Length: 263
Length: 336
Image 1 (cartoon, rainbow over the protein chains, first blue to last red):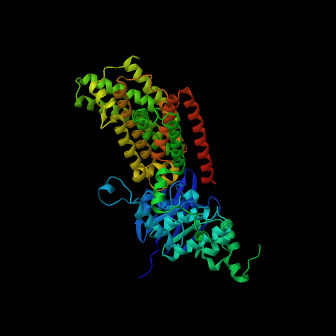
Image 2 (cartoon, chains in turn blue, green):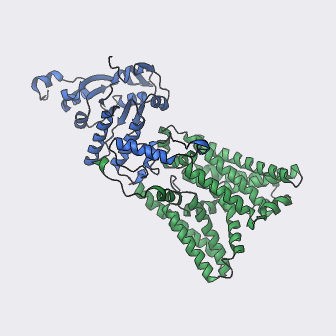
Image 3 (spheres, rainbow over the protein chains, first blue to last red):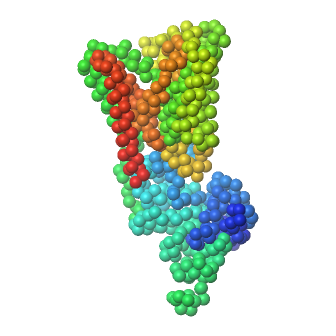
């Protein structure tokens, strides 16, 4: 049986007034891969991710999840389709503990009358949060308040939360932008473990060497369209820069010389 | 490797749950309260630690505590409710008026009064909640406005003259009544405080209250209806102000139009002294109880010692500033 893409977006267009953010962009994500979505500022990456995660709607185009056409009218719709998003500013409540953040908006009630009165099953949530985090090798206590965690640990909580709920795809917007070297390494390892656990990851990043290091496939957007797409093993940072700025990958040159020189 | 770095040592299990309820600041404050009680008891063993005096203090604290339960929810969301004293007086007037219209001096009449007091409080709470959550006007301004509006309306309705036509059974039964030696006011307050504390600590409503105050944006992204939750919280504060107005009516046998002018500030001071952050997100009901009781004990203690009771205001002001300073230190750690 041919593997359908988890998510497939075809000819997505989105304009804000006269500004064309997306002009018929195509994009797809396969199971078990890390896809990097790159492009210069204004290329349409964020708009595309917002559309695919349900926070924005396209003016035209089609989105399919596991082959089925879908219409996301809210982030809840996207979540119901197994799509989670890790935002650049994390979207964690710092005063709540890690388990509470993992279950924020998806609280588990106690069984019986107490649960119907709105009483939370803290023990169950703490246990499941611990399991979800340890599956990904995140060693953070479920009852640790987020404000007491380091930046990398906070990012780990955010990623673990997305991974705990995403059955299909996680979108991550610059997940290591605010982190130091060691913490970045930890988060990249975590992203690989998420991928290895079967969830596809879409990464938005400006850090091109990092993109090549972690992504299986790279998609380049420019002026609202997909201009290039390649396995990350086949390309170099210079190729990506070229694609982002001129719209062409210069792959012929790369393949001829192995080390593209300046024009 | 980040994810492998062990977290800071956190107390585990049961002790953590206890500390979640108490909070470290309110634990320190509990110590302060014990020291105060011990000090006044040693200075005047014949007067201060007497049952009668303790019940007296509990009664003094009761109406403020009812207001503070709602106020704690409001401040935890990062908001403020200055209107509680105005709503208290307004609700008392409406309840008194309703009982005058109903006539009679029997349980149904008292119930009518309670229902009207709660409805009047709920109405102001809804106005506050709508203007803050939906119209996005700062809570400080909205509730400053509704404080004036509710108090002014109460004065308009009564033409500035207190309504003292309060059913005797309300005054005798609830206002000065006792159940097994304990004032009914104290029992009612205890029930409200405990219910409010349990809901805050153990239910989703309580958790969303902390979450909304901690990061509204995180809540929106988790599909939590932030505006809806704020509306409910201000509604709760309004209803409890209504209940407080009813209790005030019972205790003083009159509408006390000019008797609650600083209740809002006393309540906010107590909540903040109790460790609830003015910026929202952290704190709790236990701290609020201690924070409300400390000023009451101070005032009583100064009176018992024969010191000018005005010292209480000076002491409470200093404690308030200290409490906010500690909160700032904590937040600097949080936002590092």
